[in-house]
Amino acid sequence: MTKVLVTGAAGFIGSHTVDKLLADGHEVVGVDNFRSGNRSNLAGADSNEQFTLVEADVSADGVLDGLVSDTLPSAIIHLAALVSVQDSIDNPELNYQLNVLATHRVAEAARAHDVKRVVFASSAAIYGNATDMPIVEEAAKLPISPYGGAKLASEAILLSHGAAFGIMIRCQRYFNVFGPRQDPASPYSGVISIFDKRYRDGKGVTIFGDGQQTRDFISVHDVARANVLAATSDGIKSGWANVCTGRATSLLEVAAIFAEHYPEAPAPILGEPRKGDIIHSRGQADLIAKELGFSAEVTVKDGLSELIRLG
Ligand code: UD2
Image (cartoon, rainbow, N blue to C red; front, side, top):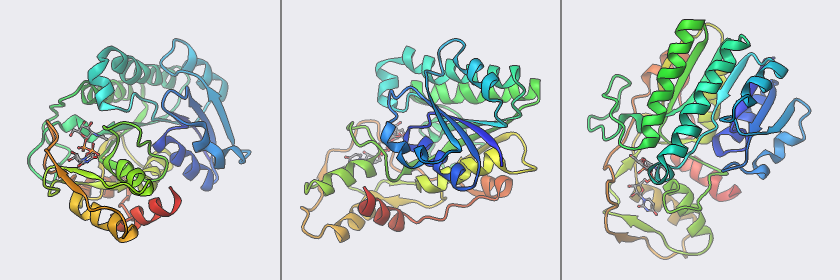
């Protein structure tokens, strides 16, 4: 059993990561300021006596230092973030506070209190408009949003701290994560969460463009498992890896799966392509398989069926 501190514990990926850690018998200290996280995401975790939750902002001076010195975890999984790319464009300063300063605080708290391992929520956003598919980890890092820039800077902060002070760092570059508890509230929310809500409400969906665009959609259950592997496996080294399936699914395929479950729903409308949209995104999944022994197990079809069943 390991004690793990999870920042952003009440978020979409955070709460599933907490659930997986608890299911595997680990002790978990969660921290969240509920800016975008939701208390109800932790309904299952709350009933587990191995779980403690602290309400706090990890970017604030002294918060993480105090928390880490009080709890002395073996590993930190740092998922707290400003999660919306659009918010980072509207408010770059807040983005750098929540996505870079907070990461610096994590790195410093780990150094000061001898935490030997940090797992970080990085993103395929660091690759920007990559055109060679699949996207390999060596691809150029040319982010096109403050969000992507902050994720790339955070990788550098953590890896340099790790090298200087002997902390094992794993940067997890998530592709398009989907599943239960993803917030569909904004037009820039993940497309699957938007489609799920609209079908559930008996409304049709709009596909921006011809629907042939593809993404590497990965289930949040697989992502949570990858996080737990990175935080608890023996014999792994500092580094980074794509967290993806290696498979591409088009929006037409996604809409067709929803339509099977909602035969009465109106057919999707094809709208104007979204400005700045990339056509294809697919990661290469070999490095994480080699380094963590991880490969995604949930197909898009099965993941969508679960989402539609559970909400
Ligand atoms: C991700 C980011 C986005 C930007 C982009 C850069 C998320 C959720 N979004 O967008 O902010 O950084 O990466 O590459 O992380 N779509 C529809 N109908 C809808 C909503 C979306 O057709 O109602 C399309 C959208 O135009 C796109 C695809 O669905 O072609 C996926 O959209 P997304 O926002 O879920 O993810 P992505 O990778 O485009």
